[in-house]
Structure formats: structure tokens, C-alpha cells
Amino acid sequence: MRIGTATVLPFPQQREQRGEGAARARVRLEPTRRGRLLLAALAFFLGLLVAAAVLLTLDLPSALAVSDSEGPVTVTVEAGDTLWGYAEELAPEGVSEQEFVAEVRSLNYLPTGRVTAGQVIELPVLEDPAR
Image (tube, rainbow, N blue to C red; front, side):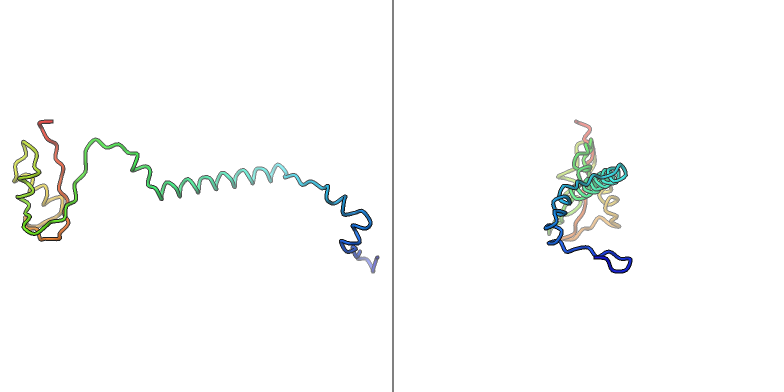
């Protein structure tokens, strides 16, 4: 049917009756070169995004890092503990208790050598000259 200058297309049932539906089913769409490049770029950036999310979530670089020296040990002070007591127990040979206490105070920014129960402090792991 033709009305004025516009063409009215028949309903899909009428197209199938005329055999036009079968011709339409055989049409195959292929992406252009530009479309393929766009899909490849999208896949690449999606892969980068997933890799970044995995690295940030799992923190793999720090887990795989090899360290020659150990970092400070975190300790929660219990009732009756003192820095001098920690120095007697943990100071390596060749390091005096006074040097160990001074290192603990500077590491934790303590104005005095007094600690209270429940306080969290870091104790240094000093190199043992006997090793």
C-alpha cells in the first residue's frame, strides 16, 4: 500500500506469507574493521580494570615482596610490663637495655619510658651481631 509519499510496510505475518521472512533470516551481520578494533580495545581495557581490581583487593605486590630485614613487632602492653622488662627479654646480644629502651621510645614517640596496660607499642627487631 502506498499513501502519499510514505510506504506502509506490511505486518510480519504478511511478510512471512509472501516469503520475505525467510530471506531476512539469512542475513548475516559482520563487524567492520572499526567495530573489531573497538571491541578489542574494550576487551583490553576491561582486562586492565579486572587486573587492577585484583591487585588492589588482594594486595599481591606486598605479599610477593621479599624483605631482608624484619619490621617492628607490635605488642599490647599487659599489666606489670615495662620497657626495661621488654629490653631484658628481647634485646639481642651486644645491644644494651638502655639502647633498646631508647629505640622503643623513639619508634613509638614516647616522651618517657612509662607504658600503661592496653597500650599498643612497636618493638624494634635489631640486628644481632652474633648472627
